[in-house]
Amino acid sequence: QACSSQADPQQSPRSTEASTSAMGCCGSADATDPMARDQEIARRLQAQENARARRPPVGGPPARPAAARPATLLGRPAAAQDWGASGGGKRLGGDDATVESTVDLRRRALEAAERRNAAPVGVSAENAAAMRERRAKEELLGKLAEHYHRRKMELPMGLNAASAAQLKRHWESVRREEDLHSQMAD
Image 1 (cartoon, rainbow, N blue to C red):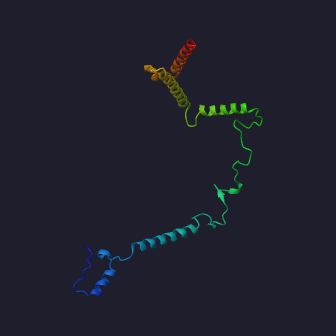
Image 2: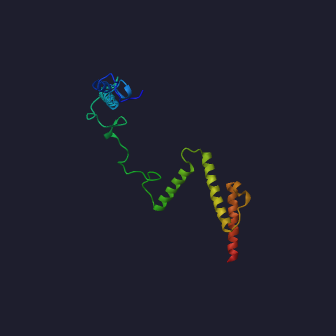
Image 3: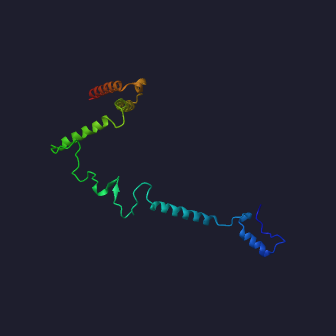
């Protein structure tokens, strides 16, 4: 049913105006503003939430105001927490205070890095070995591809299917041939 501004001919203009102001749009009986209703519900819910926050938890100690509570971190007083930053720190490779030289320090840093790379965290020993072999194979294939490209030759057919050991032997033979050719040219 659509709203109409035409008045019933039997009603006076004053009674028509009073009846439409008491009714909502299109003859609905609810004439309240929906925004005002939403705001009232929001105020009521916020008041309930605030009251719940002030109430002590069931079965627990009574709640203290935030200003009276001591600052805590993971259940311990924050002032008693020691994060280990007050000391002198640790050196790479251990607690040895006698480091002979920077060369020794670099060697030890390299050894530590190799140990980390040898056993990546979360990877089994078999998968780590397979990853190392795959990396070596890709590296050798790249060197061989570059060599053949410089010579304007095509890569041999089965080179991509070869193992890392076979590729290494082939690379060494290619290098020996290259050295022989360079010695003969001199």
